[in-house]
Figure (cartoon, rainbow over the protein chains, first blue to last red):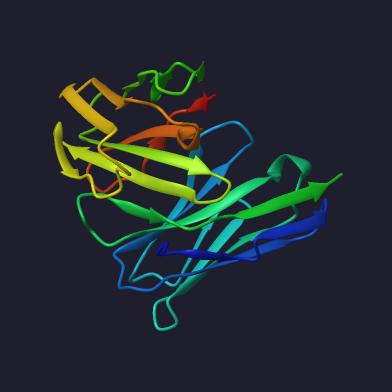
Length: 111
Length: 112
């Protein structure tokens, strides 16, 4: 099974609301990354958080990491219709850059 | 930079035919990954190369699948013979060391 598991599988919100997605993983990691995938496109890297970091911000994105619980969350504040996409977490155990991806959360932001 | 370039973007072929997917990684990246994405199985890592050498091909589903990286700027994923269950979107990604991966826009493969 995949290393990372996102929760929820699908999320639908109104524009302006915040969206929170969670990721759980099973083994020790060096870092955890979040990617976004628009329909019909490849994944795009959003943010990377290292195992010794607890929180990281990038624009409207906030990522937290709890290594004791082997979990991470991605918060998108003040969501926009353009944020509609699938979001994946990926864990990197340090094996030559190989990352293991979860099944993703599909976010729909209604205008 | 042009990003990771995959070709073709779409491929429709009949069962039993040979399929070749192509990937040009970002210049300077030393790792290359091939993934398959389906609704049922999500995103699966098929194989990855480091400095043109296959490091882990444990995700390659069967002997019908093969991948090569003859040089740092080109890789192919070949399926021979193809089967309907191979229908999926195939992604190529590249990275430099432990930096995040850059994905191409994928090849949507349909085997009839």
